[in-house]
Image 1 (cartoon, helix red, strand yellow):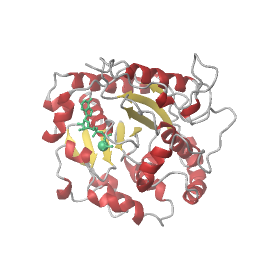
Image 2: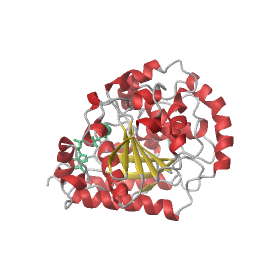
Image 3: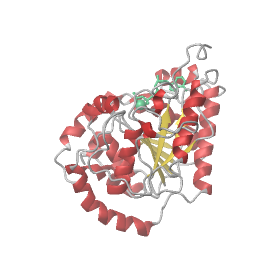
Image 4: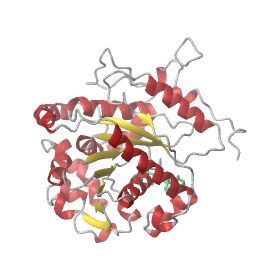
Length: 356
Ligand SMILES: Nc1ncnc2c1ncn2[C@@H]1O[C@H](COP(=O)(O)OP(=O)(O)OP(=O)(O)O)[C@@H](O)[C@H]1O
Ligand SMILES: [Mg+2]
């Protein structure tokens, strides 16, 4: 089973839309897919047509061990299962604060279904708190949806830093596999500039052992498409709502791209033997990470995102000599001797060029 966490602590970048429609496309290809709603907003649950208040057990009950994952997942479409969320999940972060091994509860919960599905896709909340840590501990791959606008990359360094930390301390298999450009406006020049900035940054990590050394911008981007924005209010995937639209076309290509990536590249270490050694290490490191205030709570996220451009690397994040620095603000630009001050400021929006 491939396990993908769809993550960006920025809100409204297209995470849930990506989870719903990529999962639906994979299911439509005949693959067995289970999706997890880890966001207290329950947008994934609603988007798939369920009423969060009417749910018997949700990801909250699984995280608090009042329910078992394999018993609570619901078949919501052919080949597509959902572990829903509801507002109870808001309390999970604080309720689990004193639980030993709280970052790995989800990983342990999904173990019984490891052989039953082809894909597990997790919709993360827009924060880097405990819910997201659980997603990262359970996943092998991270897919980062990103809206290529001015300031899109602010907070990106913090996001990668969190993935790197989890990779090092809790889940050595975790890799940033892909970056998906969402709500892409082909008429504006800025998206292409943001894309070039990201590509340049990713290139600087090639050949290192950091968690995003193999990350690629997916060859398909998601165009801005009104049908994608309308489908959630009908509780439908884009394939049910309007099969012949750019959104359906783009997400079909994304699913094909993700699936072919898994078929052709041995980037994910799925060797069961390694898992055991990793888990033994986890027992020790999960305790350490709880003591190190590196990953901010949901409440801190806004402050952290704003402060991201200036803050020092978080305590506990060591930089190996063969790894690039995570702070993207200091990426040398090809045409400049000195590092640019802040990546997001190297591509200021040109109001004229952004006109339709
Ligand atoms: N390609 C697109 N074109 C137009 N609208 C889109 C597109 N992708 C997503 N949207 C809309 O943008 C809004 C935000 O998308 P979405 O809910 O997927 O983001 P999110 O990252 O999951 O947000 P949150 O962080 O709040 O969970 C939604 O109203 C969605 O319908
Ligand atoms: Mg969402």
